[in-house]
Image 1 (cartoon, helix red, strand yellow):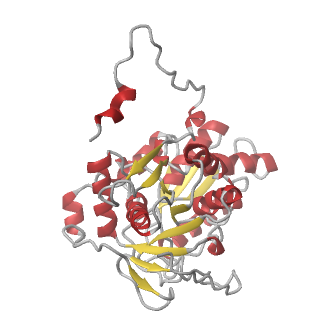
Image 2: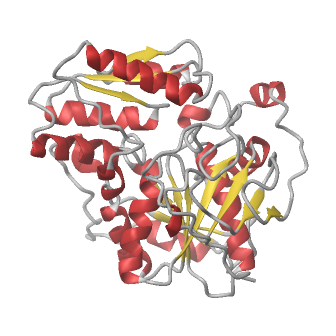
Image 3: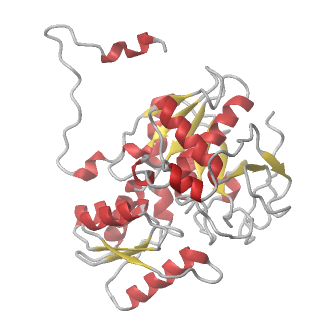
Length: 380
């Protein structure tokens, strides 16, 4: 390690003043201004790495941004009355953002989740003042997400003044990420390739849209989970939470993507643990999957390509899953050989993918992009 890198953190000379950290009057003011960390080995050779935007530095993670923004905009338009309850489906991270929004604007919050929510997250949400409801069984076609959405509809029917932000289809979700994109430009000067996990579609769409105002030729790589239906694979059981979906959110901006990669749990776990051991910065399933793909991009794209990867959260909610050897062994995701390169398919419907796979044809499986074929030239 180059010890000169530590010089900014050495003892100050006598009489010198340290830069003053921010002092804020409300926790909502802590959202944004997240740092960027350079990541290379073991994902890419030295000098060929990527810049990781550490959104886990927000109080609750990346979805503090849309949680606050969607509630603020709903209040501005008169869709959410003062003091009215907020009810939303979430696997956890948006729930934390909405708990912050409820505290900020004075709204009770109910988070509808399922048995896959980590007990620690459910307890934390309760401690933050939110009420947590869990559905008992997945929907026969739409899985857990559709079952949660149906419960939200039931609760709203009994709550005439209740409001659901509907993160899957609310354009305010994507609009909330304009500041994140502006921060990246201020921090990096330019971004040539953005690597982003895709779940509701909000942060990939909103960040890329604004970055392209500065860099029109920006490349966008989407990262999905095996078993997810977002990009045209059949919906199936998913161990990974926070990315992927068993429904088709309208916030996913299909024409914006140059390619998509599907990642499996064992591959994401390897990446998460390498990040923790080598870079002291890690997170959950989305972080591991994004790091794996961003490292591939750093090795594959021409030298000098400036690659940014969005890390949505930190590791703490995953200590009993991703970072628990017993849990990982129980699910058969430790000790597997990690592929150096992704497999590749020519079309999302070509075959069922079960491991890291790349596809350069991206289209809306429901035809909402009017069948536009976005096959791209080989970047290599």
